Image 1 (cartoon, one colour):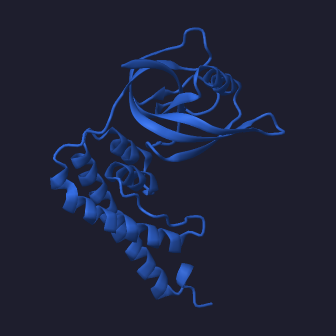
Image 2 (cartoon, rainbow, N blue to C red):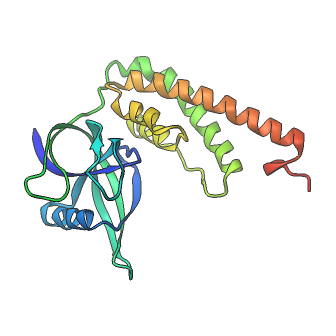
Length: 218
């Protein structure tokens, strides 16, 4: 079933079940938020394919994004809006238009992650969970701003958390969001984690050898 949502093109990829903090300062997106509040508090977060987030012409987004529900909104003294939103479900843009608004509107349809033959995913999922756990441990050691969190038991929630946590280029995150089925997403994430863990271990070993960074002997 299709529905109409306003679109917020951003230089970020949002996954279902994941939180996102936004600072809205542009007038057209102020208007978009007020539109959302009148129509249910949901909009589509879509990665920018071409263009820029603020000012100028409206950016061209990718076709696959994520619906976001506003859970907190705080005006600032500068006249901006601080938002906390949560990803709801993947969406596919069917048609974009303006309809006289300064922001994009779109007809969208749900794009659920296909989950076939779950018994065949048990071992790959367990392997991925161990990769994610190790990655978060190392990331917490390398960055004071990152805090480890428990991995969810639900396999789809775990996959989306794994995709959100990864510190990789946006194009690779978008590829994770666009994966048609759980099996392909597990394979994609496992390969990305294997690469990133190797890079992190190499960085930490080099830091330890030189006595710098988190292993500084000074």
